[in-house]
Image 1 (cartoon, chains in turn red, orange):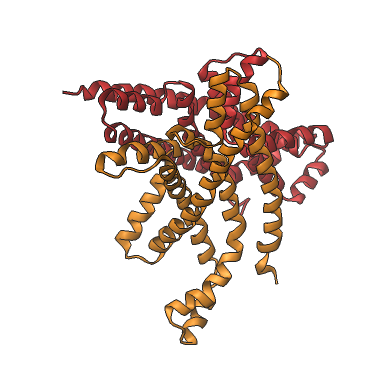
Image 2: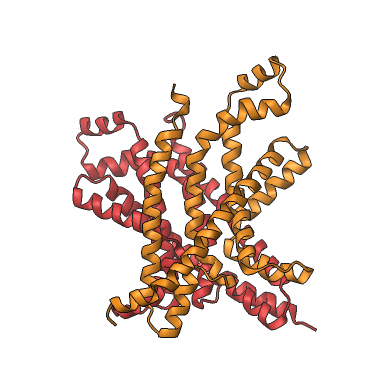
Amino acid sequence: MTDWPGYIGLILQGALVTLELTVLGSVLALVMAFVAGLGRVSRFLAVRALATTYIEFFRGTSIFVQLFWVYFVLPFAGVTLSPLQAGVLALGLNVGAYGAEVVRGAVKAIGREQREACIALNLSRYQSMRYVILPQALPLMLPTFCNNAIELLKGTAVVSLISLTDMTFQAQVVRAQTGSTLVPFATILVLYFLMALAISYGMRWLERRVTRGLDGVRT
Amino acid sequence: MEWDWNFVWEIMPTLIEGLKITILATVFGAALAAAIGLVFAILRMTAPKPIARATAFVVEFIRGTPLLVQLYFIFYVLPDIGIRLPALLAGIIGLGLHYGTYAAEVYRAGIENVPRGQWEAAKATNLTGRQTWIHVILPQAIPPMIPALANYLIAMFKETPLLSAITVLELMNQAKSVANSSYRYIEPMTLVGVFFLIMSLISVVFLRWLEDRYARVEEH
């Protein structure tokens, strides 16, 4: 008789690791998205070049290759990371590169007249970004950020391959110990799907929040 | 540990072998995705309501779950119900199914962007359903889709290393086996990254060209 409650418990433990990775990875991705995205619209050539290189590099290879590189090659450069740190770093940098393009696109989409109004009001560059451009650009970013967050959630499955005990890893453990394949894999597929649903509902709620003050301003 | 060029040349033939499998998986995966995407798109748009709803759910489900887990599912669960697939075939089916759901959205958007007037004109000139699709709708719907589809092709190419998890000997897996047998990780892992980076930088240029060529049909 197989101890199913125990195995399901194992998978739920893995789900916590997956959640942790998703949250930490998203935070890093968000930071990188804004840093690199605003870097791409900087007035300094060097900053623009740096941001472009980062974005092209991380979008050019898959999360899998980056994760292995971070986990297996960086130790030779003297940087040893735990699987969790490697996972968060690779996920955050990878998804951050995609997010950066979203930030850039949204900032560019804010009309010229808004920028001119900022100059007319004698706002500094920081002030116009902080109080005028970004509050309007944020609602434009959110739908794509939602997709990016779901991509990040899906990317977390890859960390099971560097021995981090996330949901996919635990499902493999259950498969190895019970010989049953359908139950563990079907369970985690459903759990991943529920998490993706939760992200998209959360984002929709957030979208309503940030557009609240903008009624009538944007068409 | 230092970078060793001799070792690089030594492992190159093995990596090229892996690259061939990677490209093979991408090509067949893309063909399958294109076909599956079309089926999903047509089911969602023209099938009776319950079937369209069910299709929409399946598409959402596949898009919301990781490709890796889907590959495990195909590779480990299907044999239990009597479907035993070789690893590469399982990988191609996984890629095709996953990216087929993305392709389906592209098709749907492309078809819905054909103006209503075109459908009405086709009906007015007494074209059959088949003729309408082949001679009126698809020739207008397909060109704008091409850049978006190419984008997913590149994305799929970058995801092929996941196939190594179900024992397909593609580029990543060859690199891992070389690394494990020689205890040198720097060269194989870095080379895999460089291979993918080069391929995707080339494909970005190609994509720009496609966008110039096809994405601006509606302008004239």
